[in-house]
Image (cartoon, one colour):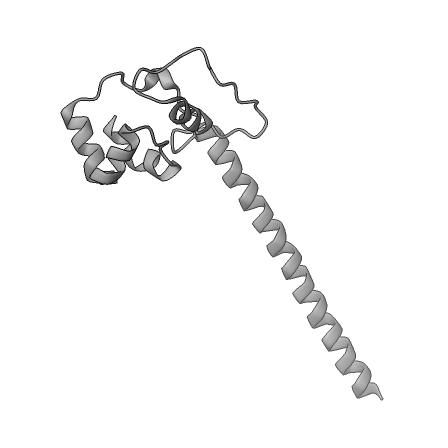
Length: 127
């Protein structure tokens, strides 16, 4: 009987140790996730305003001459200031966009198709 009690005590200590380690691990994961969110809110590493607490105001008064309404809405939802987008596209800028997006996608966007998030990230350095 004492052996059985000793085995139970050892097993109980093992489970307590595993439980404490699991709680510490979960706490560290939550802390890391909060730190990552804070990094994106503060530093804006992709040039996009990500602030879940702020209301996004869309400046509907500015009408960009090269963009359709759908394109403007898409870019504004990504946090892009439409006034920062050039109103003329140089051949060098267009060629850069063709290199990163492909000629077909550039033609679709020029015809009025809204750029996707992927399109924006790929081509933002061209403009």
